[in-house]
Image 1 (tube, one colour):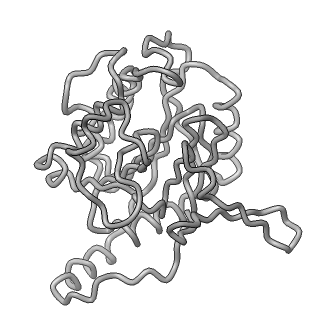
Image 2 (image 1 turned 30 degrees about the horizontal axis):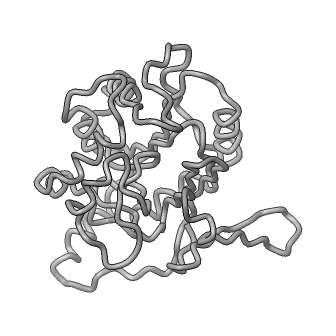
Image 3 (image 1 turned 120 degrees about the vertical axis):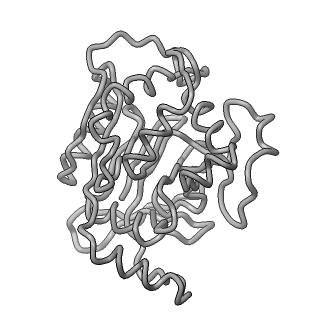
Length: 258
């Protein structure tokens, strides 16, 4: 699945990677077979937008292109979360999510995909998005996008778990996971409108007990999400030659196709 952004904090959700091999550990086979016999979860795509900016309209068009129903929360509300393009802020997004997602808090059959409203586009539909989440992150319940910068508090960098490959730091502009875990995350701490949403999620991720209990991980190698801020040269756009104007995107350093 994919999203493309043309702003400083641009983000990219990318499509499905095939031929991934799961663990052959026999101890996992029974549980995996049980899961495979269950009805696959449905996807709820959500964003928070108080204004219909050009970036928001672009996000809507891309959702329509891939037959994704975009659930928009907060339209018409006064924005009190600061100018997050340049400064910390955005806590109001979390408060709006709390108001809007309560009906899903016990829904084990729902995966919530959150995307920022103003600098994201989609590049795949529900089937591909869920397939990639299931194939790559079947051991986890929540996945956040990753980036090369520890923001907004760089002094927290030493507290992050190390990664063998890829980007180490959480970016909160794109994340997905099972509804009960998402509900717990957005209700874990008090938050004010002017608080920083990325710092809120970072504090949860850096709490080892919470991270393990909620089974949170980062998409460090851009299998699903591709952040463009500071690493645009890592991304290659490939055009097919069959005349239908479709493109694919690859992360060159990691040889992934988000």
